[in-house]
Amino acid sequence: MTSEHLKPNIIIRGALFPEAIQVIEIKPTGGLVKLIGTGVDSNQTYQHILDENQIAQLEMNPEIKEDHATYREEMADG
Image (cartoon, rainbow, N blue to C red; front, side, top):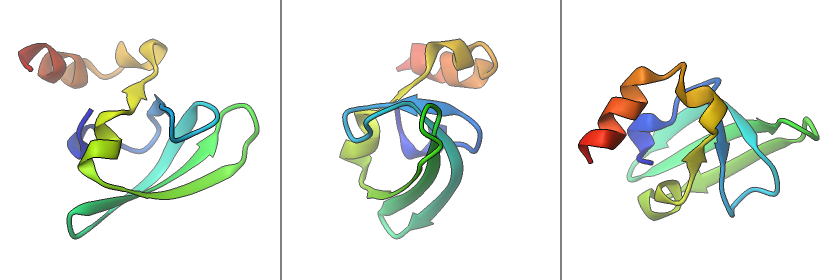
């Protein structure tokens, strides 16, 4: 995943978070991205500043990918 794939309302997973996160807001800040999201199980708010390497470790929840055809096409193109 890249920072361009991060959009409000998608569900992401990754080792940086203890649960799946619904993205609320993305704020680019220089070469970093501030991600604000809510845990889908706990409803806890998470705020992380991520670099591209950390973003690359995130995955979009498979159930949501069907709603994001562009994401799937870009991932298939490499």
